[in-house]
Image (cartoon, rainbow over all chains, first blue to last red; front, side, top):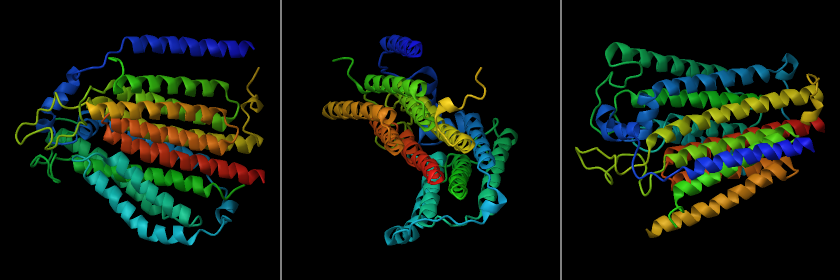
Length: 233
Length: 126
Length: 85
């Protein structure tokens, strides 16, 4: 009883604080200072049509590097926790027969899904999308592959090499920014190109492609670990 | 009618989702239910941050032919705030990582006690 | 102005439904129903992001928050069900 009263009290205090925040909020009709700078100068400083990409990859590039590191750490801890015993490793999962529809669809759709993911992260500086979305779409393709054949053996080496090489290349491009341009992760190490074309915005398409490959490999790795953990009972 | 607009609606929904999620985290006994509570809390906070960046009647922060002309790429009075969107973009991916990590812990805990009730895990209680 | 009003009506409807679904997720006894309800809350949030002109966030939320998270929840539920049987 005491516990419930305390809980209600906590929630009421929280609601009261939120009401105070809501009361003080006014719908804005203009941008704040830093955003106004991004909106005014972003096109000539970075050269990316999608300003969210400009903020994620260049203006707040450190943030993205830390985020990718956190995802890598999470994937490692999950791999450590869901590690299989040796005798479980060779077991196969008993499952109902996958339907004809799923098998045929997976054969046709998986290459298309991978292609769409790659399209999304290469065009991240022009259209909505980017490395995180493209990586998630690629992981969705891997999920379909696993669902169609639960006993599939994914090639660990490919996943690990893709992940490591993309991570190292991301940092190397960042350091090249110190040597050749204004600072860490500056995108002007190659020319900005013509605004609005595929090969423009300096290093942004390259960086975002590496981010996409890395995120895709990490999420596929997490999904694969969860699938393999079904073997032990 | 002044206060009925997309920004305020998003703000209200975000606050209510946060309170529902927090209530679930505090009251539920099942570990999976607690994790679902965290994921609703996460959605609420993301919705809140995006609504704070909404500017009335403006379009998405992508410079294209409809809002800019060749050679003049100053779009400060035509777009919503891009910074909260960039923050939320990374926050969603981290939220996925956190959910996956919590579920891995839940599986380990289930293996230890064959139960998901949080009351059974009283080894450190005194 | 007309489309603005339409957006506001859609946002209010989506908000009410997603709040109701969040209560379903917390109160329903069946775990699978709760997981699906949380996934749908996430999906409706991504529609709200589109209305608030944030297409990048909407794509991420729809694919990660609503798709892959739900899949991982079901892996765990399946494992628990199998080790009970």
